[in-house]
Image (cartoon, rainbow, N blue to C red):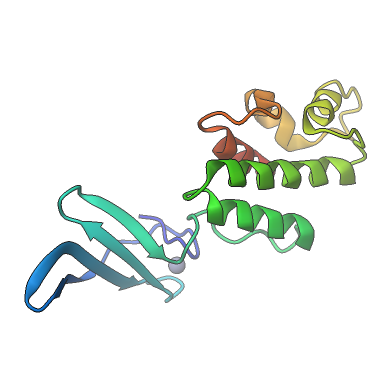
Length: 161
Ligand SMILES: [Zn+2]
């Protein structure tokens, strides 16, 4: 598994506890381990009836930290988009779109909506100005402003790739 803090692949070494009240099992098990690389704790809950496992700490995704050279405004939107994606794909997509719009605006694409910015970037003939992320993953940018299943994750993946 990948550590959700540092994104390094680590061997799982969970310490597990059945959760219950008054000697009655709730059907849930709590698992905790410390990452051998970054030493931070990872906590997850498992529902034995459904076999669903959900990381409850750290919250968010296992995307790892934003590189330090990313501007704070963009990093804040990206981190918030990653944090809410499990709860609201639409909210994550909105934040991801804002993140992308900021990246494009800072690169000189001043169109008012994301679809027009993407069209301008894709039509760019000056390769020194073009954003490398768009050219690496051109199929992901055709989501426009529509929210479709998977589009928020695609936008999130695209925004800082
Ligand atoms: Zn770690």
